Structures are given as structure tokens and as C-alpha cells.
Figure 1 (cartoon, rainbow, N blue to C red):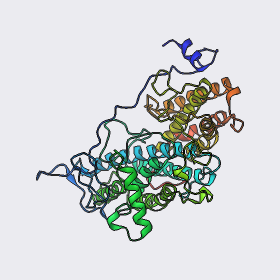
Figure 2 (figure 1 turned 45 degrees about the vertical axis):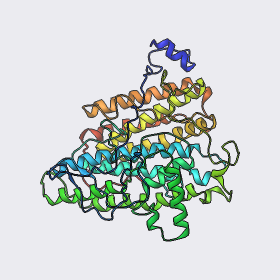
Figure 3 (figure 1 turned 60 degrees about the vertical axis):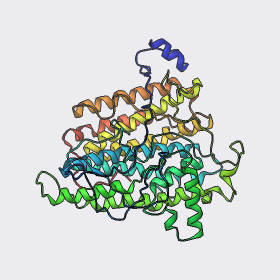
Figure 4 (figure 1 turned 90 degrees about the vertical axis):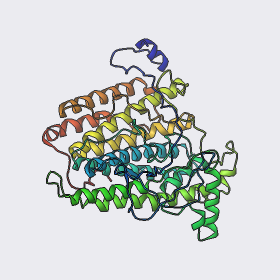
Length: 461
């Protein structure tokens, strides 16, 4: 595709080489049939072995003839172990955990941005909180940081991708899907964040619990497989941290301080996130300000909670889900540039223990990115959160990482100036220039910096 045609597609006349990158045509992987959450070990072989003592059992359902698992049958859940070496297995599951936290963060943000301005207490304001959807998304960003903190302590590189091949259908909560808030999307979120037995009708203790489980069953049984739970993954990770630490490998730091942090991530999801999504699903969240039967209203009703944003939109030209409106696509592309900038800032920040870079990434998220996402929702388009083909933090050297960040920030700043007439009124200009100054200031420190080997909350909260 010629560069000139790309610029015309965006509605930009300046086709100078530094204006914008070539748009690639990248699609999501073809949907494949989901396997069960549990791969049951049937043969008496050493590998793979299952985690058998991971705390409370989680619901697992036998798959009936139609391939749709019932939602209310309970028996213990295990995650199959792929590696005998606990260090390798821990790294495997931490990689999956990082992908999950990133994927949930993005899907929750899309959901939050779809909420209409009438319901701000449900959508949230950008502060980490278990009481609103955006606050939960920010907490998922914190979880992503803490998982990468442990990866760094183990000598591994940060993980900022989401659902990279090979896809893990036994662990990933559900197929990645950008969609507006609805009873169907909230049902997935409340299920995957729930604690053991909370969604099991057989264990319901009150009339309210029984009604909740019945409604959840009805929504999720509509031709879908149930989502996977996040809790068992963290049970497995905690067990492996203890196993690795017990091995007394002198090349590794003391891992015991990470156990309460991992337990905190699990509890935050199974308590705060679960209850907020449950209230939103049932239509009783205080953010609905007393409006009754919100999800039973037609989507055309002004009181219906969410804009009808498209599913899985993209700013990549030529994709079947390409955003068609040129002005919206320009804003979405600028949103992508900020998204990629903040992920690369996080990658370098995590790998070098740089509070400044982590905080700079949050500035991009809560400033220009949030402004663009809200504006796109009003325009009926939605923020695409397109993946960056070359990944994040892939440079072989610190100098290369810093150089790549500079180029990406300059690209974002240049494109921001090109489309100035399209920017929302609350868009904060100049953030890229400020981040460039931060990068210049901390670059000498980054040369000798190593990933922290202790729990590192500074800049992650």
C-alpha cells in the first residue's frame, strides 16, 4: 500500500516520511472451539501433572453432548503442569498471568468508556478502585505491574503482550473481545472474577444468591461456553513460588515477600471486582442512581446504560472492522500511538525499576488516552487498542529501548499536531514532550539499572 493512499485514508494531506507509519492489515486469530478449563489427566504418567492442593476448589463442569458446559455443577479444578522444573513452570504461568491482566484491563476499559455520562459513578474516574469499572481496570494495570515485578525478580523480561500464540484456552478467562457494557459482557466479567462457589446455584444460601446464579446461568448458557476463573491460576502461581523458594536456588532472590502480594491480587479480584461486576450485572450498582430495570430497557432508550459501540474496532486500514469515519479513525490512531507509547514505557520501567517511566505511562493513560477514548465513544466508534506488530520493549540494549521510545513519542507528538483540529476540547497537548524530558533525565540512571528483586509497589499504585 502506498504511503500517499494511507494518508488520504486518514484525511491527511501531508505525506512526509515522518508523518505516520504504514498501516498494516492485522486481524485477530480465527476463533477456535474452546476446550474445557481443566485438562483431566487420564493416564498414569509423570507429565503433565496437575496442581492438586491449591486451596479451595473451583467449579468445574462436565461437558455434555452439545459441547456447552453447565454452569452450576461443582467439583475441584486443577491446572495441568507442563514443566517438571518449578522455575520454568512459574515463568510459564506468570507469562499467562501478565497476558490475562493486560487483556482484562483493556476489555474493562472499553466497557467503562461505553458507559453513558449519566452514570459516572459506574464508569469511574480513573483512580484505582474496586467500586467502578474504570477503577477496576486501573487495578488490573497494577496487577500487570506486580506480575512483571516478579518476572523481573526471576530474571525474565517484562510481558506486555496479550494472548500471544500459543493461545491458552484452558487458562485465559475468555476469548478477547472489545464490546460495550451489557448484561452479556458483565456476566463474563463477574463469572471470571468470582470466588469459589459464588456462581454455583447448589451453594447459594439466600434468595438473592439463587436469583443471581439463575440469571447468570441464563445469560451465559445462551450458546456460549462458560468463562474460566482467574483464581486457580494465582493459586498455582503461589504454589510454584513456594516450591521455587524451597529449592534454595542461590541465583534467585528470596521469593517469600511476593506471596502476600499474589494473594492480594487474587483477593482483590474475588472480593472487590466480583461484587462490583455482580451489582452492575444485576442493575443494582449505586452508579445507576435509582434507575430501575436498566438492562431490560431497549438500547435506544436514553436511560440504557451504554453506547452501542462496535465489536473489536480497529484503526488499521483494510481490516474488516476498520473504523469508517475518517475523523474517528484519526483519533483512534492517535489513541493507538499513546497506547503503544505507554506500553513501551511500562516495559522499560518494569525492566529497570524506573518509577518515573511507570508514572509517565499512567500520565499518557489518564490524560490524552482517556480524553480520546471518551470522545470516540461519543462518536460511536470506540478505542481500538490495536496491538503493535513488533511487540513492546524488544530492543537488545538499553540504548535501543530509549531510542525506540524517543522515535515513538516523536511520532505521536507529530501526529497530534497534524490532527489538532480534531482533538477533543479536554485533550491535554504536550504530554509527549513532557515524557521526552523525563526520558532525557532518567536515561543515565537506566544504563546501570536492573530489575528490582524485591516487591516494588512504588509507581505501580
